[in-house]
Structures are given as C-alpha cells and as structure tokens.
Image 1 (cartoon, rainbow, N blue to C red):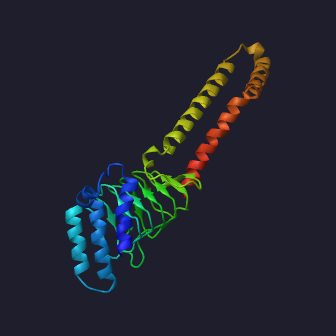
Image 2: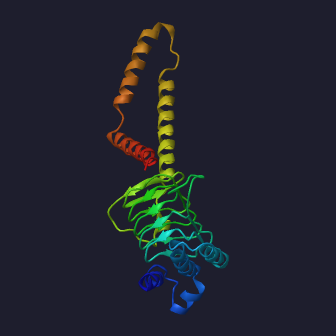
Image 3: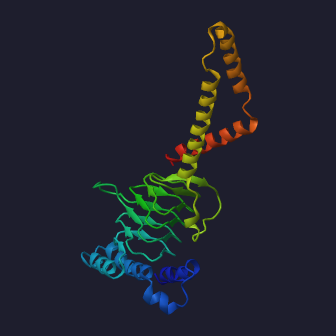
Length: 262
C-alpha cells in the first residue's frame, strides 16, 4: 500500500513541470487527493464493508471534483492532471503509469450489468475531455487525443483521435505523456484531399466541355474524331507526379476510413 502511494506521489514530479515541491503537491493537487482517498475506499470495498466506501468516494468528489467508484481497480503511478470532471466507473481497470487529463470519462454505454467499463493498459495517456466508453480494452502505450470518443478496442502502441475514435498512428515508440496536444488532424487531411480531388475533376470537366464545343455541320465527323482524340490525348497527358500525388491522397483517405474500425 505504501509503495503504491509513493509511486502516485512521485509520478507527479515526473509528468508535471509545474510541480515544484512536495508541500504544494500534497495540498494543492486534487488528482493526488482523489487517488489517496480512492485507495482507502477501494480497500474497504474489497472486504465488503457497506456504505463507508461510497461515502469516502462522495467526499472525494465534493473536495476534488473527481468521481472514482470504490470498485475501480487502479495500478501504481496513476496521475490525474488538474482533474475536474473526471469520472471512473465501478468496473474500470487501469494499469500502471496512466495519465488522465481533466474531463476524462471511463464509463459505460448503458444499463448492462457485469463488466461494463473500460480496461486500460500501462503507460496510457488520455487527453482532456476524452470519453472511453463500454467494456473495451485499451492496450499499452496508447495515446488518446483530447475530445476523442473511443467505443472500440484499441491495440497497443497506437494513437487515437476523433469522434468516433480512429487510429491514426501505430508504432512501438513509447508514448510521450506531455505531447498529447500535438496530434495530427486526420479529418482535416482527408477533407483537404477530397477538396483537391473535386477541384481536379472540375478542371477536367471544364476542359472536356471546351473541347466539345459545337462545330459546323460539314465538319461534324472530323470534329467528333478530334474530340475523341483530344479526350484520349488529355488522359494520356496526365503527369506522373500528379498521378503519384493522387495515389498518396487515396491512401490517406483509405487509412482514415480503415481507422474507424480501430
């Protein structure tokens, strides 16, 4: 118990550059206060003591603005930065060295019974306002962007953003807990690719309409042949660089759509 509390205390100095001395951390960090009270409530909850664990949880919520059900299982080195509005459900399981920012919810999706809250692996970072809902598993070293809504399992070593959450990065590189705000905007990239595609198609349509302008009757057969040749030539004249760029944009769009399935 003591080693767990010590890990919760030390992790703050590792992950928060604003933490200057132990006295400030002890008195002015609601995330630390909430987890300390939860450790006590969880011990009482496990041995079956009624009422008291929920009372401790309620007092912690009143003091810190953080609601953690006494039944939630939380590993060592757990840190809630700022913390206001964080909610952790009864059957949630959280691994070691996990960082949550303010407004995070680890909740359920309905009134189902049994295991109904997320299982979060080790070294996970969940950005401000993110919602992780349902009996799903979040792997180790996962980074969830601020404001994301995650409804499906996430493999280890992934970065998830968006509503619903999409995997936009897979790697074995360790997550940097202080860079959750520098995530790429996958939706903007896909929209830009689609806009570029529309503009390209509009230019091609305009060129074809210009080539197919009405011609004199006595030249109609020649004009038709010219238009056909011009159309064929126009297709043949697409630069290689333009085709390569188009393939890259197609790849970005496909990866975005595939990411919706995590």
